Length: 400
Image (cartoon, one colour):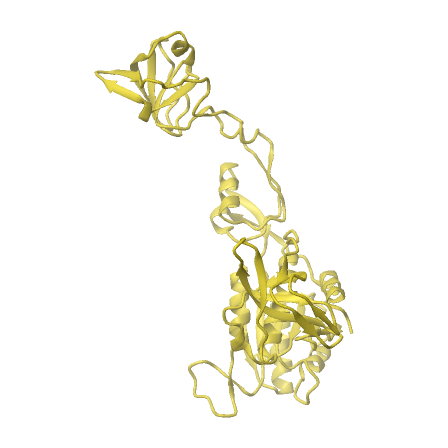
């Protein structure tokens, strides 16, 4: 069987990179940038007042002057005034352009105002360029601000706006289909019999996809019937970029998904990975280029495989830069017996020094999804047999 690393490589080699589209800036939150963005002009674009107060020539204070006539007011957004005389000052507002002839700002808290005159408070020091955000001190015109491959959050959107980008080129959202299979599944809110179970995996998958910014997500439930599977999977393969299936990929009599996909021309890239949980993981590619992930139906296996393989692969198809590997130390010893990579749910705890530890939170098997409540994700432990001590540092995957 493949190792998880080998499975990663095969998925990355066969998942298509999504096309690029140009969107209005207001619609780009959560998308992946597919162009470089450069500074439109210096930032700040002028010597900017950083405090409410008055602007003046610091040389005049250095010569002994402590009282000044208020010449006028410089508001933010107005063209710059010009200082008329050395003994004058100009009232200024935060964000305003520094008036010409001034090189210093005195905060209002250090001034006394009376009859059009301001006097500096005793002990007030005045230095050139104090409380002035100098032009170009953040970035210069033409500086690279954002590189292709970044996911656009609020800070990146603000930077793009500051660069004058009304529209930007981003990765198109993929068309995703989340498909659960099984005669035993019943929707929440519908009557359920003693031998049936609630359809929960699909809701977890859709939620995880939307938390990561994927919005074009369809949802379908198929019975364990070859004809229905063939018809519906054919439709989804023709209308979607990626199919994420839950169930029907193991070795049971009614695990029909791999055979039906093969009949539809989907080429199996791999089936089974040396891991627990999630050993029956299936991945293939249709003639159209659509990717198909067949996740095991047990709920813990479904969420682990989704988080470990599907979500990173989808982010890669968007052109997003690879995320740094996150590692954490075990908060207690863990014994791994089988010669399989072991995925162990954990809670994240902090000690008195602010260090984060992964406290093991094992489930009662891969069907015990209720044990995942209050866990933050899972760690990946090397194959056994081995015991990994408290403090063993290993890779961690967060649910969100």
